[in-house]
Length: 224
Image (tube, rainbow, N blue to C red; front, side, top):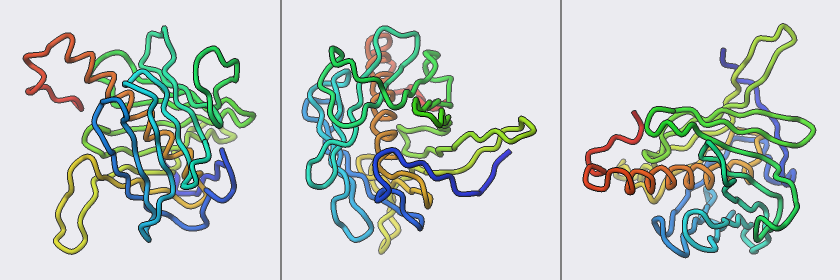
């Protein structure tokens, strides 16, 4: 069951929970390499978020605001039976730091077969989110999972990831430029952190396939 009601989730600050729907243009600045990063622009072309990586895929990602203030750190959880990433408030440079994660995100290890990624928030709300679609193709939908008093579950749409279309010529741009559409009331910084974790989970899967089937990778459909 799906519900169109707005779900308000403040993770960082109220200023990232807009009163109206917002669309951000995301530019991935490099592909699976040291220095990998992202820049998020608002509808007026101003930088809203910046991302810095401390190294290859399994190293931390730091989400910052346009001034360079740390908002979230993304780290892989190892060892685990899932491709699991954790988000921490502010800056966390390594696993030796005892700061607890604010959210966890994971996908089944059944490569190429699971289309659903789960997100669990570890604050008093214990909110759960579900992400469906294919990030490598830049088409995902993010839902808040709400349980009613009669124990039925409603899915509330909070964000979408889509291919970027050039408005003048109606051209679909490459996968290094895409959009993050945030519904009113949903924390855009949290939404951007989910994009980073999705990118890393997708990258984990690609690296695993490269190790297992290096010669057949070009024919592999990642989203089946």
